Structures are given as structure tokens and as C-alpha cells.
Length: 243
Image (cartoon, rainbow, N blue to C red; front, side, top):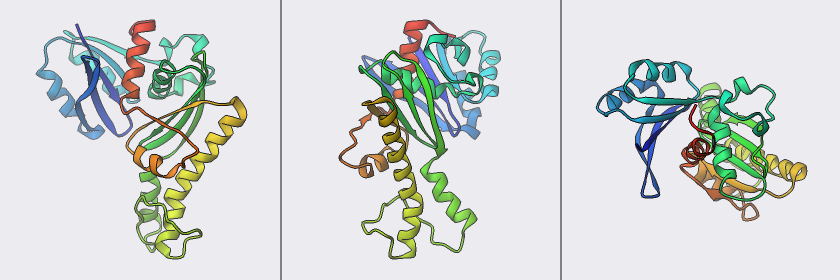
């Protein structure tokens, strides 16, 4: 029976399937609308479901609500010890590891994965698929919201990066302080990875990939993989079994 993969993140719940070698998202909704996930699954026959979740209550509810389904919830306990050097694996979001694992299975050499969503993570996995950890920082939308919320006297910025440096209008100054900070921080971390571990392949995923693609610069080559978390889940299950 074909696997249905469900990723429960900090902001969204997404389900995906792979048909004829192509991925498609078959369900997506905001985290606070989790009841819509159950309503959708209620209409399904028994399925093999593989889950990556940062919200334990939802994964636990899936297990209890659908006894007729085969539900495998991937957790840090499923990661072989030789594949992780994170000092607090019990606090690690499985989506970070699985996205890195999915990328590392596609290329040779070290890999950096940027997941530019509600939070932005910038993680490193070695050529032998050992996950080392990385960076968790506010996503671009969080930075922008912080201006409107905490500094309401300033203009509310968009995601554009100004052409002029330094900013010569209040709007451009705020853009540099949000999108500019976002891009410069990422570039700085990428250079730090290169100094520490040498050349790597950069994979990017998440809603703000277009911002990265436009602004990181021609010297930084990226591999766009919108289904990277699901590719990682599939590869991990194939190599190590379901949780």
C-alpha cells in the first residue's frame, strides 16, 4: 500500500503522496485548523501513514483516532546513533533532520539545508549523512511582523531588498533591517559553514525560497526542493524502516 506522508510543522500541516515518481501535496491547512485534517482523514480508507511532527498532541491523536490505519511516527529515537551529533536530540525537530537526510541522499559531499518558513533553519549534514545541527532564527515574515507590532511608528516593510545602500528613506531603512538582516545573516552562516567544513551543496525549501533565490547573490548556487521534507521521510523509511 502506498505511503501517505504527513508533516506537522509549527504553522502548517501538510500531507503528500508520490505518484509515478512525482510528489503532490494532497492536504494543507494551518496548524490551528487541525480538525480539518481529521475530517479529511475520516473519509479515507485504511492507509499507511508516515508522520513527522513537532506537535506531539496531534501525532498522539492520530494514533488513537485511526486504529485501522498503520501510522508510523518518526522521532529522534529512530535516528541511528551514528547519524547524529546533536547534543540534545530530544529537543530536535525531526523535520530538520529529515530535510537534511533527504538532501544528503541526492548528492555527494556535505550539504547545507535552509528551510525558510515561519522559522528559518540553516543546518549541516556531512557526506556520510551525519547530522551536526545548525541555526534556528526568525523567519522573514516574523521579522517583518515584529516591526509592525513592536515599532508601529515605522512603516510596515515588504520583502524587497533596496537597490540603494545605505537606505535613504525610512521604508528602505526598515527593509534593510528586515529582509537585509535576513539575507546577510544567511550569507554569513553559509560562509561560516564553508570555513568550517569546506565546499557543500546548498538545498533550499520553504515559503521564502523566492526571496533567497533573488537576493543571495550569483556566487551562491542553490538547489530548490519544495518537497524536501517528504523526500527525506521517504528515504529514511526505505533505509531504516518506519518508526
